[in-house]
Length: 337
Image (cartoon, rainbow, N blue to C red):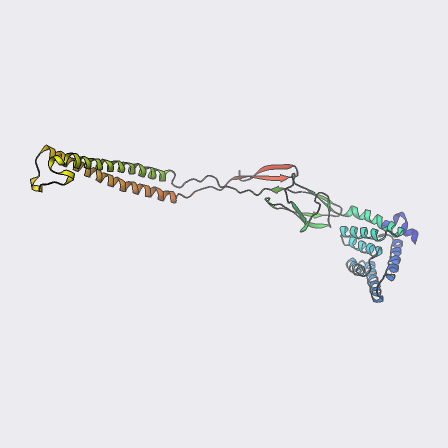
């Protein structure tokens, strides 16, 4: 029986009964010799027996559960090998590989058992799916990569996974998160290129004012009218100054205060010039006030237009988006062209 265990075909025990008889015998011996209370030894033996019967009936889930429960009482290389076989049958090559690797460590002092476990490790390694992550170049600071929600400690090496669907995520501050789903078959290798785009603020295109330049025409016109109003106001002031200070004293109206009654208005060219200058000053004053009111109206209208001059901007049609890929940094255009 020992020759069967140590033979070159020992790694094929999944198809050869003699090798499994050897494993069964070794497990029985190890369980029987397990340290602990008699009740624990009896419970471990019972679990093993139940797992063995389930395995013979191809009930791999039940067998695995029994072997794993027995392992909580006593851990042996033989139990690890039996658990690994069940995991292989259940389509869990990575878990099987880990069980076989653990068995080799536990069997380091048993050459026969070690010779049985090592080929199983080599065979199981071939069947484990692997995800190869291609990182951005250069990799952003603080880059975190997760597979199925678990952080990848060393994303630069192939990541062994179980068969089935897996979620790959990558994130870094200042970049939009990366996410991709892959479905891994037994023994497959899948390359996943991590592409991270820099978070960019898309600015709207220049706004088109609703009123165009019309508000500024009103404001400019109001300013020009105000300037004219001020000029006419000054002309009115100057005309009154000339009438009161230069012409008034000569006709008995110094400072614009006449010393005679209305009916005694002198009939002279000097007085008529004085009166004309007063009328001219009043006309300038009236025009100045009118233009001032007009300037205020124009300015207020222009300001009102400015305050309601909402932008009529169109949606951006294209945006330059910087991205970092394993081949380097690039800029891509996204949107409608």
